[in-house]
Length: 638
Ligand code: ADP
Image (cartoon, rainbow, N blue to C red; front, side, top):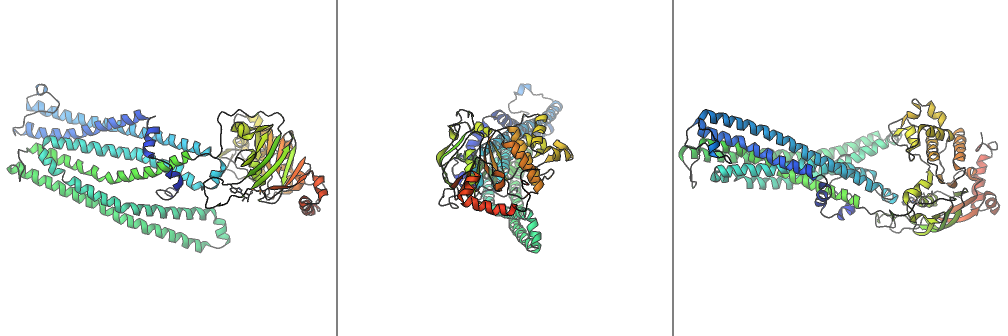
């Protein structure tokens, strides 16, 4: 997963909306933690300043302490009157200063690492949590046309890239700037003419690095894209392993994987062959620069200034040059890498901020009053809705057909309404609108007379509970899962709810009872068991209104009976809107609506609808035919 997206087309639309992402990163997140950043940068200045002291002092020592070259024993920034005159004292002073410089450079390097890393980590943490929060608040429509992998990749890879830049990149930028400034400064101070000779390699290295970056970047992009393709294939194959085996497609899939891997090999090899030429080339350039400095400086020391140069160069100064010119070249070589890090961070921050700026399609009013529930009366008034009315993913849904159209019905408090009809008729969609997972296109949904769009979202969602076809179990224990949404509930309440949901028995049979880990990495529970946990969950939340999307999956008769019993406990004293597949379960509903193609085609009680001899009666006939063989009451009683 790690390299699926980079500077490719993912999240293009969101990226385009973001201006100056790096500036925004520093302005928004850098400001909070500026003290760590400033501390790191200042310490960086110190580390590099102390780093150039020893070569300089060694040069002074060579000239003035060991040799009497005529160079006076002076130190920059230190008044001559403070300096000792005896060579032995001078020697020990230099030794002490060199040791102190190394020590201080190390302390500064430590503080720099601390400051910059702390800055990078804090920014990373905040960016990730802010992005997650922003994403979580988006409506379901956003998630249905994005791939989970894409979103994960932003929360992980892109945020990590920002960290890499803030950490490694800033470190590198600091190092490059300070080494060049401090080393270049000392070289110019000691002998500006020879310094210019040494710096002659700078433009050569700059041009060389520039061409290298130009050459390697498209290759890296290609490598990332082939890694992405290969990972998607591997992921997909692992997910479909059962189908692969059942279709004896192993050989076919091995070939596909081999092709993908081969392509990765080829593109990567091309990138590698380019990269491995770079460092030797750079070393050679730096070496040539070094030789030129050595020859010019050496001749100068031997026999006075060569060519058009003037003045003198002592042995000590020459040694300082030799030591420092090495330090000067390497940071330049890292410049290309820095540009690369910056560009990647730029693309990543565009995606991160693009996600943060994604407009919510729900018009949420933060100051809306809470919903006040009196009876739990639900009213659909001319409700029409189509998916994808907004700009996203137009190419897939060019013409948004309404999925539900002009729905009108009222459920009185404590009553049960059932929706029946063929798959795809729009039943689930109609009920999602009540929970405001989407907002109605036209018309209004009211709870006890209050439009759901005009009350606070949390109060609405607390009022409306949901038991769906599939129960998602979160990572955690059975108790955690029952408690989900009513996080403060204590153990007794959890057990009580589980008992009412007919779940207590199987839970206590599990190895660790209520503490058994479930979810993807935990114990696997059957569909029926999961459903009972979901029912316990909702019982604990105790909502006034219940949305029930009956499971279509076949469970054995005994489980079905038990689920049915727990549902009966659940629906007592609540307003219920249920989607039913097995008509036997909703026979007693106060009102049954037949939905076909997004519209209500029949309405009434079970008996009325049977008498009307329409679609419902036909459906009942088909299902009753299947049930005829069973003894009376099997579906609802012990
Ligand atoms: P039912 O619950 O009656 O089976 P649904 O409400 O699930 O029907 O679906 C109604 C229609 O809306 C179907 O044609 C389905 O393909 C479409 N649909 C459901 N969910 C989405 C979605 N997130 N985006 C776009 N279309 C959807």
